[in-house]
Image (cartoon, rainbow, N blue to C red; front, side, top):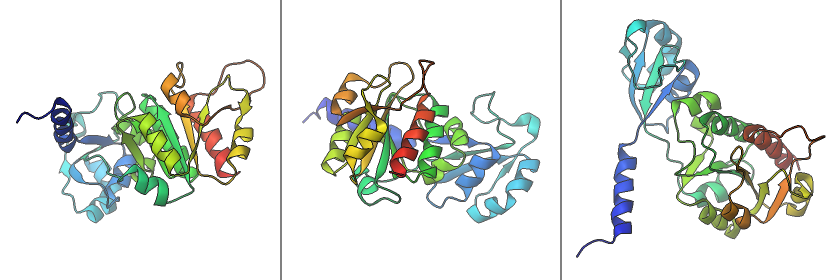
Amino acid sequence: MKKPAWVVDKERAKRAEAKETVWLFGLHAVRDALLNPRREKLRLVVTKNAFDKLEDAVAASGLEPEMVDPRKFDVPIDPGSVHQGAAMEVKPLNWGSLEDVAVSGEGAPLVVLLDRVTDPHNAGAVLRSAEVFGARAVIAPRHHSAPETGALAKTASGALERQPYLRVTNLADAMNELRDMGYLLIGLAGEAELTLTEALTQAGTRPVGLVMGAEGPGLREKTRETCDLIARIPASGGFGSLNVSNAAAVALYAAATR
């Protein structure tokens, strides 16, 4: 009996996911990954200078480093990447299910949802803010969002190893799941009438999901419709707007300190 197309697609995606690896680079990102027991480590490429700085973390990880000449630092990362003589191939982190993290994860019952935020620097900065303000997770769609990459890890400044970054098949479905778990979903949009403070007052003590759109297009229509409230961060004057990572930091602070 022939398998339905959706089953075949799902199996193919699972196989591709099993093969997927990430190259992290830079002393900070590599050190944090070496010291993370949850991280499956495959290959470590370092110069003598970088190894001297990472020696304790390398010893703790039990991984055998490949020592290379700085002029022959040949790993599959963007040639312009500031690798500081250290790069490591790893498997993406598995944080478990949305329910596990959102209901019983560490930190306050607070999550950030990113709607098609594809820039790894923005996503990395959001992860960093989420860790600082104690959010349980940053959630993004598997497609059309910033994947786990070396550039994202470097911007996240270690947060990628500690802050759950969940990639879901469908963002609207994940939002509905969160609502069933008791979360109130607040979408951020510059033209909203409600302010973020007013929306958080309505939320009271309920768990909150902050939904952020991409630079320019903002929230997609389906995402906007799935939110419970749409709110804005008040700004003085009409001089532009905050980028998504700055807006996330402000919103996280407001939600964490309400």
